[in-house]
Length: 150
Image 1 (tube, helix red, strand yellow):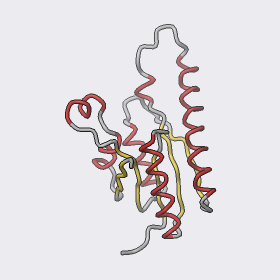
Image 2: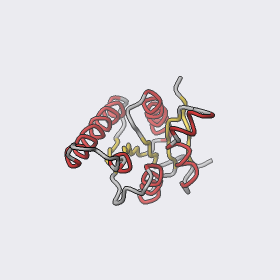
Image 3: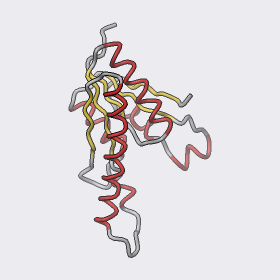
């Protein structure tokens, strides 16, 4: 098997996501690969009726939160001696799913591997919450490594 040269890891700040970052760092170091860390702002979540809330303020809050998540993940990569870049992804439409945005970035970069954490939910909770990881597996044309929390 050829070594991966470009590894993309998607992060959301959860413990499972942090575990995916650890695995992506390990693989990138082992294979001397470039690492790109991405966080996608969920535009669909911004589409909820916010009542009196300022839509612009909410969007900016999501951006700041995403940037902080990216900074922490990039710092972990740099501490491991890796060169990694971090990118905040935003959609041009509230109808685009986070999974589609991440898969598109993986193709455009181009990544050889996508690493993403999965909670492994089943049954009713999976139906209610959905799964970004499952969505990525369905739409990505690149290989996907799913990482569970320890």
